[in-house]
Amino acid sequence: MGKEKIILTGDRPTGRLHIGHYVGSLKRRVELQNSGLYDKTFIFIADAQALTDNIDNPEKVRQNVIEVALDYMAVGLDPSKSTIFIQSQIPELCELTFYYMDLVTVSRLQRNPTVKTEIQMRNFETSIPVGFFTYPISQAADITAFKATTVPVGEDQEPMIEQTREIVRRFNHIYGDTLVEPEILLPDNAACLRLPGTDGKAKMSKSLGNCIYLSDTADEVEKKVKSMYTDPTHLKVSDPGKLEGNTVFTYLDAFCKPEHFGRYLPDYPNLDELKAHYTRGGLGDMKVKKFLAAIMQEELTPIRERRKEFEKDIPAIYEMLRKGCETARTTAAATLDEVRKAMKINYFDDTELIAEQAQRFGQR
Ligand code: TRP
Image 1 (cartoon, rainbow, N blue to C red):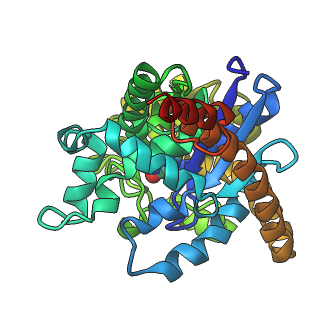
Image 2: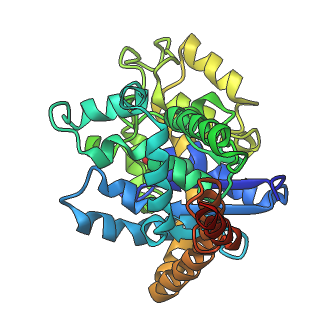
Image 3: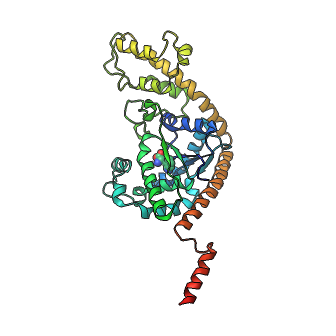
């Protein structure tokens, strides 16, 4: 115990997962799951967190729980290797959150950069739901309940992990060594850190309509790639093109492997040569887009096909989740026992306590 290497991460079920999620975290998780380097992997659907800013839209969250579960299975998360579960079914997480709330100040939460931008994005400035405001604390409960050592997430989650580490240090300092300080694991490829939308906007987001979903059909993927944002000043094929902010090249940085050239674009030995030609002029957008589309199809076709297979037996997916919740609950309950003990609120399983108190009162 204590030395185990444990992975934990999750996603809010507010939509189907897209290729930003895929390169930013999902792909890595599957590799980690299969690496044999970790003792346990926990992957969960953060429905309770999704409700913190969708409180009037429970149906949306409910529908997307199964979508996300299907996306998980489709990319290769494997319930025989990873515990896949639903956050709201683990009430222990609420209890941990309640205790951790005493370890965090309001001003510390107000300074959390992710919470700050999310408050702005949602126009919550004048009326922030308390549950939303405190979700970093509940996220600390998610992570610590499973004694996670490694949290693979996107860059935007960095403040959450930092907040968790502070809570762990504070808890252990006051109550004795109980919780494990997690480490963040970011994508190692810069293009994967924050994949832009197909329109070139900084982030893929459902509301901007600039996502390529893992469950998109081959036609949808083709169309989306062909209409991607490139360099608006690259009008004629002979014009020199810019790479910065050119979404097609950012996606190539994220997805292209050397062997793709042999398969789909044998005129070029590698990505550097392709970029050099584009910058020089004489290489049209459509040629590059066709290449990217071929790569995307190669990556997404097996995912799409596996998803179709899993869609044929939806009850089996719910059963997988139910079992995952059971396993997760056992783990979380064990941590909660330790937390209660450390916090001295374990009155009824501490036999010495009752004897001690009896003696104390007897002595008076
Ligand atoms: N906040 C994460 C997101 O928006 C989801 C999440 C909730 C999470 N709890 C977590 C991620 C714990 C990692 C660990 O995507």
